[in-house]
Structure formats: structure tokens, C-alpha cells
Image 1 (tube, rainbow, N blue to C red):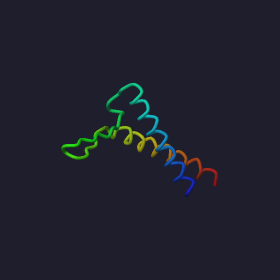
Image 2 (image 1 turned 90 degrees about the vertical axis):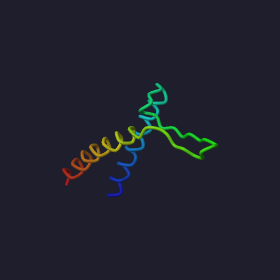
Image 3 (image 1 turned 135 degrees about the vertical axis):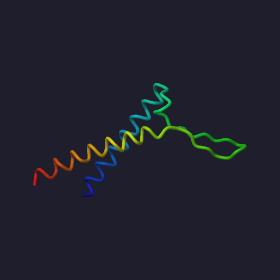
Image 4 (image 1 turned 180 degrees about the vertical axis):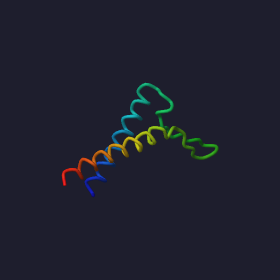
Length: 74
């Protein structure tokens, strides 16, 4: 159980990092997440959550595959 959670979290962070890196490297706005700090209005956050949504979806499918493969050994 703990191994499955660890694999899922690792995959999520790796895919998120990969997508965000691609966004920053090639200046793709919908793959970028930036923080903006404004002095007059306070603190604001801007950016796309699409890389995180894609990472969640991919993590789900990889987790299902991992779980099926793990259960078939028993």
C-alpha cells in the first residue's frame, strides 16, 4: 500500500516537473505556473493548472496499470 502511494506521488511530481519545465523552456503559457507579487494590491498568483491536471490523469492511469500488474502476481 505504501509503495503504491509512493509510486503515485513520485510519478505525479515527475510529470508535473516535466510539463512545467517544457512550458518554461519553450515559453508555452498554458504549461507555465508563475507567482506575481504586486506592492499596491498585495500578493497575487497567476498561472496555469493544466500541467497538474494532466499529471493527475496520467498518474491515475499509471496507478491503475501498476495495481493490476501487482495484483496479477498474487
